[in-house]
Amino acid sequence: MSLAHTPLLVVMDVDSTLSNEEGIDELAWAAGPDIAAQVAAITTRAMAGEMDFASSLEQRIATLKGLPASVIEHAKARVTATPGARELVDAVHRAGGLVCAVSGGFHELVDGLLDSLGVDHWQANRLAVSEGVLTGAREGPLVDAVAKARWLERWAEESGALRTVAIGDGANDLDMMAAADVSIGFMPKALVRQQATHCIDARDVSQAIGLLGLERSAPAVANEE
Image 1 (cartoon, rainbow, N blue to C red):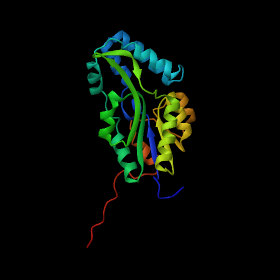
Image 2 (cartoon, rainbow, N blue to C red):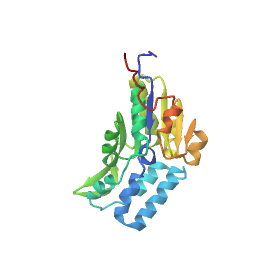
Image 3 (cartoon, one colour):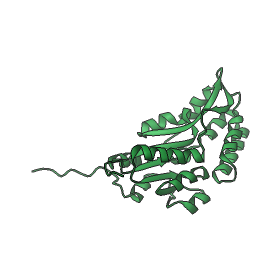
């Protein structure tokens, strides 16, 4: 592989990794506290590997059926960047690398955030909306554990990356972490902790900068006399 190719490709999960929140849980609050609690419980089980992701996502989206599409904007406003996210993206870019993201959440909630962070490419699921209301289904290809690994491999091939890194927190990230040269568990669930190359246990994703041997900030330029 040519050394002229991208030196580093970092592929990150979004919900609870690049963002502080689980997007589906934020949407569920619009359906009321009982539904929100039910959805949050399913999310927790799925992230721990106790439920198949596809079926758990289907169950959670179904609870949103009939909600006005306006709830998407309300949920989107509550999705915030994890501390250190912009620092990490900038550090990878300074090293000539790419940052990509794959989310089991939804484009409608994460697109603005990822664009603001300077993420290069991303993929996520999409919510189905009809006549201004959520249908309780999704549309388009499913982004699950298998898809996350495939996108990492596709971006690596397209960029000619010399080293690949996967960062995530839950069971849905295990396939892409296995496909990467280096895997970092971020506030990881037990299954991820067991399999990750490194783990970050503080809610500051910029700690990955040191783990990857990158510079935290641009080197100071010496004054010329």
